Amino acid sequence: MSVATTPSLATRAPGNLRHRLLRFLVVAGPGLIVMVADNDAGAVSTYTQAGAQYGTSLLWVLLILLPVTYFVQEMVARLGIATGEGHAAMIYQRFGVWWGRFALIDLLVVNGLTLVTEFAAIALAARHWGVSPALVVPMAAVGLVLLVGTGSYRRWERMTLTLCGLNLGWLVLALWVGPHWGEALRDTALPHAPASGITGDLVFLVIAIVGTTIAPWQLFFQQSCVADKRLRFADLKLARVDTALGAVAVVASAGCMMLVGDALHRSGVAYADPAQMAGALAPQIGHAGGVLILLLMVNAALLGATAISLSSAWAWGEVMGWRNTLQAKMSQAPGFYATYAACAAVAAGVTLIPGAPLQTIILSVQVLAGIMLPPAIVFLQLLLNDREMLGARFANRPWNNWVNWTVIAALFALSFVLAAQVLLPGMFPET
Amino acid sequence: MSATALCKKNLSVVHPLDDEPEVKLYRADLGRMRMTRPVRLSLFLLQGYLACMLMLLAWRVIAAL
Image (cartoon, rainbow over all chains, first blue to last red; front, side, top):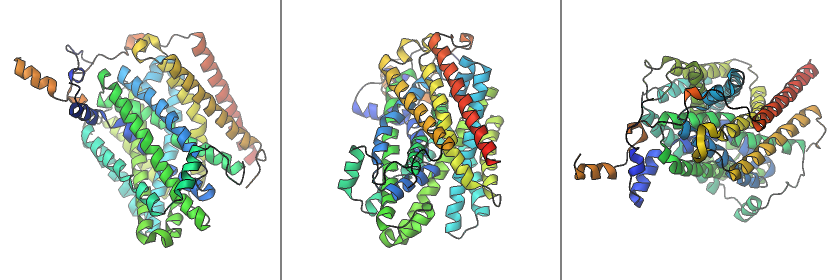
């Protein structure tokens, strides 16, 4: 990398409100995208199911996850700005080849399975509309490749932020179904178990919510995205604001999804999947509302698919030493774009295999993501304590470490509960 | 550069992609992380955790057969 001879222009920008806003607008993107893309098709399914099964009584889990997701992603943004390198590259360089390969393979496997769930959601919506998935799924895969292949990071970011903006539709839907606000507010503020008590299903669902809200690919994605955007040291404060806004957006839309699921809960209809829910809610929100639910699910799947494929392509490119930037045209970074396209193509292909075990894949994603998240965060925590590299300015402060080790301990505990549940299926009572 | 031009430049907001590249804190010659006791302990516990999860997976596979 060439050496700057003058301080970054960003450091010399004056401090009036208009300038701060403009500076925020040029810095914002990675934090918002990573958070909103986290509400992918699997998340739509998990949150609406949580609402449909337990009403609003799990909203408090989201409130707890709000600071957790912010603290984790803030560390990633800080590391990306300080080093200018992606997460996979950092693990390879600082922990050696063995851990580097472990982190990369782990990422690629979980990402591959998650991608299949994104395309499965698109296929589900297509079937509901009476369109052949064999037509829609490949079209979605091609669309995803075209989205990144413009040779301009800024163009990709603008298009992706537009998709993120469509997520506001969940707020419209939540208002549309007419939730019981008093109950929802109480359930958000007061942590408690649902009336049915602590069952195996509930424990699994809570772990799925945690695994959905904080996923390993997010760490890799945001750091590489920050590095690709070339955010500067002086951008750190605004990158934090970007991440905080994203955290609020992801938790708010997750809450809205739960409220939509709660409408099904109140109507007494059993939940099967978001498409069935869209049909079952027709008496309350009409046909248009049902269509909106499916459109939002497809939007979530597309957002998730582009972010997850990019996290794989960036990570693989970093390890292979390829040119891996959205600023490059396809001909200038063939390996990077080929990896991205291969991720989308393979996942779309698996979705279209007749009789593919999609339900097993969806279940495996939640379990694997839950198991692989704690190791990913341990690497992050160790890297953020690497004072030899980061110095005092960017390394974790003691309070950061207290918060993060607490989060890590909680995640390990949840993983062990998940493991215990697999080993001893009767540990928790059934519903 | 004239004072006016400098002032104009200072008032502008520069996109990171249009700005001059910064010297970042990571250097290739840093090599691997120093294996202090907390780092060694963390990696050791991580290996233990992964071994547990692998055994769990093996258990599930054997039970399914």
